[in-house]
Length: 429
Image (cartoon, rainbow, N blue to C red; front, side, top):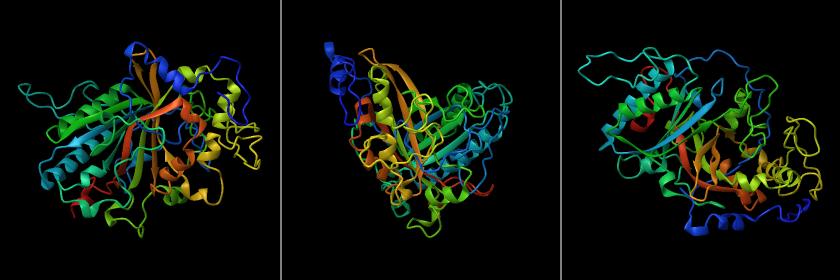
């Protein structure tokens, strides 16, 4: 494949994405779990460099109470992530309210390490037992978000719908699988060990099984090897490039208020203050195809040096890209980082906070690896944030190597300020 401002690859070294997909159709083989979603994928840049990774420290219990859900921007990013989307079957508004009350209690218990209730052995135990009698600290956090479908006619919540919350449409390059897309309610669970994730998911499902039915589930890892070591920089995604180098700094209160959290006076329902819009894109990466692409072309597509993570023509990962080459001699005009954030006064309003993770689901019927990025972004405005960035990325060369297959648009609920409140209580007042 030949791209403008990129060196020609050695003859015969590359396939077009169309030809690559054809190889999977031989003998009638088809993609397993095809259609889904995408956005600022490999190195989707922001304008403000994030702080260095936190050095390894003893795991802790994450504080549950606060005006904002603490798992969105935790003090330490755990190593593993999971997203579980549910269909809500609550028969009426009161039952839905009880569902949120019970989820709140269970999440608070999980995040604080509350020991399981012991009862007569003639009954099923109150938990799975996979963490033993006393769960240990593991940086566990749970974030609850709701989809546009929760605001349909079932519960009389239409007047409470966040202004920009809609069912995620098909976007550029999408092959969305209905079985892996959308949902009434989304749980985002992070922890440092897989048994903690599984324990939390099973407890939450057990608590309200009659009202919540799984729609889709994906899990993976949020940090690369050594990513918490001082000076390690951002972790790498499955294309081998550092991902998140220039993410928003979660410790910068004014920056997060400007770009992430709904503020009083925004054109939103009053209950949404301190919540945030969430875009989820399950993006499959055609890694075998990518691995056969020359390094020079890979770097031109992303706009960064692969080994160091530095912007093209620079030395350090944290150097701020400078796009003062109007013809794209240094950074191609269609490089991912240049399109995602061209660093103009206008694009300053489009910054997003990313919290995705890499995933792997084995291989498909054609013997190709099924892996990629579960992209997650939080933003104060979907139109100014995710959708503005996605619009600029439409048609980028990276589309040859990725295929969005699932996800959805959600709204992450405000937090629980004190024990007298519950997640989503503003929906019922």
